[in-house]
Image (cartoon, rainbow, N blue to C red; front, side, top):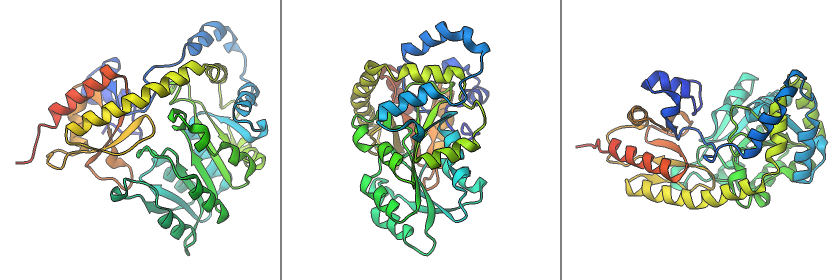
Length: 365
């Protein structure tokens, strides 16, 4: 199983499974910007490596200040972390749920992992295929006001693996129930109108709202590990008090500051994605796949009804061809008919379509 450790992008496991070196794969199982890191990343590594004999800034002051300025908030409302994964863990540890943790499923598996690790029990609100996996206000509010109401909600916007944002008004309704709401905006950078959708500024003002952002996906630096959280000064202080010292290394801090200045990279990425996502969706549809709407850089895809293989078998066949895909049946609420695919550059997407077309020739009689 490619998702041996619960995620896509595991090229070591892929090499073990398929006998192919890591650099020979085209990886659609992880959702990184296919343009690769901005030029500023390489400039930082070339110019500042001599400073690696010094400790990192333990307070991450430079990057926090730059992020605060970018979002128009106070620096005390920002906490940087070792990727969004650390911040999800810190949030749950700081909030210490004694009761339920509400999840709209399917969703990122680390929400449930973190909640259960620290004693929370999961209250799942299903998003249904018949509704194109959109979050129902009625179902959420029924859970939010019921006898077993969650004290914490963890919601992705855009949601992983469905690729859709959550209605802002729904989040505000949840906040009015006095539950604590954690919004994961790890992929929101890919959305052209992100500023109108993001709840970052709202999180800085509300005691029961936290927003988590990732910098690894959009800037294609997953090996560096970098993310940040925005919340009230009290919430951020609680999370910081639980964080391992020097969690954000020097390279991550320098690179984070540098990439925020590359406006052209941001604009080019969003222009590319709008066109390429549409092209890939259309070609997947021609193969008989059902492609669900997405506003970000990945697609949830249902295999054709007449296809005789499931997602796990398809992953095996594709991997043998050097193309990695995500078996989405590992997301709660999805079965073996679903896969998740990153949107990549045209040449890579064409290779995906060619391999997928060959593999889907296995049909039911």
